[in-house]
Image (tube, rainbow, N blue to C red):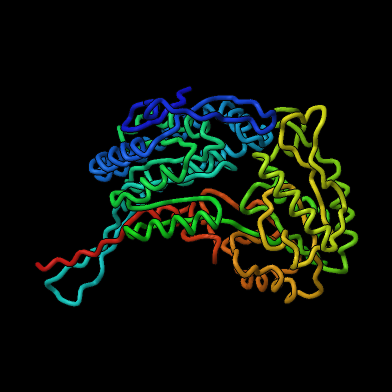
Length: 479
């Protein structure tokens, strides 16, 4: 596999042949060294994308579609290889990694089809001597900045609609997980995308490279998934040249369990949402809100299942929870737990970093449940991004909605109930971009994904994701 930069259709070393290490979070071992891009490398990628845009933006929809189809089939054919790579550099269990690859491939397939459906409009004119048209055209060269927690799916979810729309792309993956990005770009090159249409810049210094990518007036759009803090910084930088931005930022997802819910299904739903990727997802359940009358029963059922969950290296059979991404992630989890316990929360299970045989040098943490959590605790205000499930209680539907609607975040929310009326009322009153009703995993390629408030701008997925990469042009013709 090429561990170099991909610029203008060529694999090349970074300036001065700089490299940085990639570490397996389950073992602490260095698994590869990849090219460490400089500002000059980033500028070269911008120039390549700009040159390629002139011709790629004018390619037929059928041509773009055919290339996306080829890329999709290559990803699907190499799904096992890609899953193994994700598990090695990111840590999630192998079965979960395979699911991510297939989910990511779905975006490429969807936009291979959607590329042929960029339609315009004819508007009735107010004069018989005029014809009014609306055209949709690609916005221009795009920079896609992707996170480490879904190193395959977050790339395809951004790149596929951009390419389908006729944009060229520069991808800057997380320094924690560049290997999956490299392999995906290799497969795209094999599919036959023209030179400069897709460029890859890996770097251990996101700030230096980002200043070039965001500062260039030739880049017309930024699409980013990551923390709210970084998203705000990118918005400020993009403002100087009035770039369009799509931001999928932090979440603090509530998971509401009402007394009329099927408790066994609700418990399974919380586990599927909370502990996927060891709790390292922006849409995972961060606050478990349980109706007071079923609180004890729910907590016991939840504890019984969580205590049986297997933690270990993602390649091991039966592992359900892999390592956290790095030491800083472990320390944040510990800090949130200690703060909650000091302020009166009760430890139901877990609460410890796992060390010793089988866990040496890795960043493993027990799946943890906290009861009696209140709003004054750190865990109530910040994303933990780890395998910790804090439980709160409520008495009424109105109280549940009030507790759920976080003042800053609004990415995803979940509710379990058997009451149809409540389903409508609560889902309409939740201030979130995504609501899963009796569904802990609502994200699919054909539906919009994005948040309210400080959880982001714009949407990814479905026809909505394609619109983010298109400009609307009005043409009035006097005849």
